[in-house]
Length: 145
Image (cartoon, rainbow, N blue to C red; front, side, top):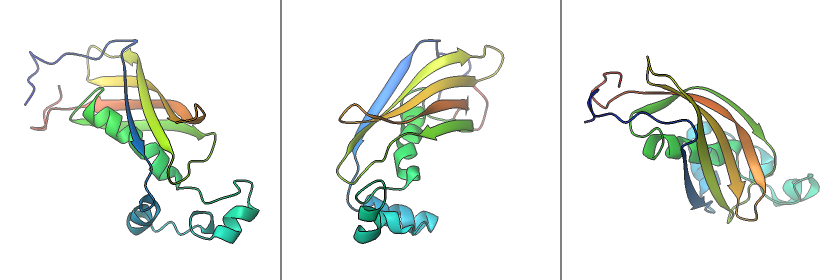
């Protein structure tokens, strides 16, 4: 457990990122927890006729990598989102490698609140999501850090 005295506060300009390959079963897993059965995620004919041209994953799959970055890397364990403002710019398909990246734009000194610039990029370099997030970090014992 991190204590108040040993916590290293995020610094403006600090960055972190994680990458993962979106799996074929991610759509089914996300549907199970969300109930999102949009034909664009399942119906080859409907997806092919759409502007996407093929099956795409739910936006929640795309943005989920940012949950992992803030919880595992920066600001780190005990971090939750207070607010997000995300724009989805391009589709993600099963088999795509996506990289979630956060950059600290502001870190309060009076409270464990951090503002982040957020992006998710496909392996081909296309930014598929961008925006901002505000996070709160507490220690795992429930105390604010």
